[in-house]
Image (tube, rainbow over all chains, first blue to last red; front, side, top):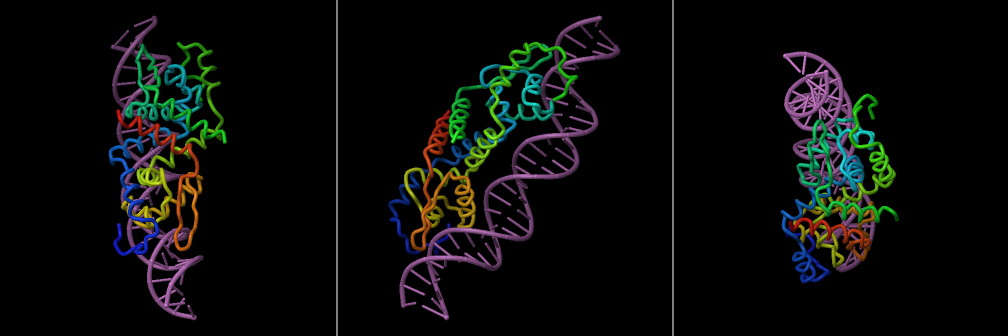
Amino acid sequence: MKADVCKEFITHPQVIEAAKNDLLSNEEYDYMSMLFKMVSDPTRLKIISALFDRELCVCDLMEVTEMSQSAISHQLSKLKQTRLVKSDKRGKNVFYSLNDDHVRQIFRQAQEHARD
Amino acid sequence: MKADVCKEFITHPQVIEAAKNDLLSNEEYDYMSMLFKMVSDPTRLKIISALFDRELCVCDLMEVTEMSQSAISHQLSKLKQTRLVKSDKRGKNVFYSLNDDHVRQIFRQAQEHARD
DNA sequence: ACTACATATGAACAAGTGTTCATATGAGGT
DNA sequence: ACCTCATATGAACACTTGTTCATATGTAGT
């Protein structure tokens, strides 16, 4: 970013070139950032683990997570917009479930990390 | 959370019990939340991918990520506090590198997800 | 049509986050 | 001792985020 800083490089320019080549596109960073943001809130993590092996309606999620209806509904809305969960309206209820397996994998990986 | 909501459960209480049993401890949620927060910022993601296969000093990271010295230093400080990176002071420079393999795994998993 | 229940949504507010700017610390060379 | 380079750090600021409160929408039963 600055030109007149770090005049005396110790690591050779090749190392910096290599690191530059390892960079991804901005779209990839933005997507990953969005994905991680979605799973970086404890309430949403609770919701995700509740939905891990079954579908649940908003009602059920209130019971399970001990959160208010509004809070859950707002979070589900975000999770749905970002395609992490899908919904199925049946009668008065709306049932939510995880949308694909990537979420489960990332969740599991972090959970393993948490055990240390 | 509320008692007088959802009087007519469609899913049986057993399902709710099962979901409750799948919940983790608050400490686990907080840890996972913290971990995901750390990798949910594009600047930090850039830093992490630059450090993926090599150590770099703050100087190098400025060049590679095209960010200001202060911004990088602040982010490295957070990444170090949360043990995602470690540092090694040699002379005038401080070299940073990833601290364990969990970060790499979680990063890779998300990157795969990003390709869809 | 009316009522009760389930969910969604908008506004408002407190709390958290990332950057910049200015300055401090610390190490090496002279 | 002094100067310069490399990094760290504190304060200030704009911006984002999650919750609550109030209210709207929609569905089923009567």
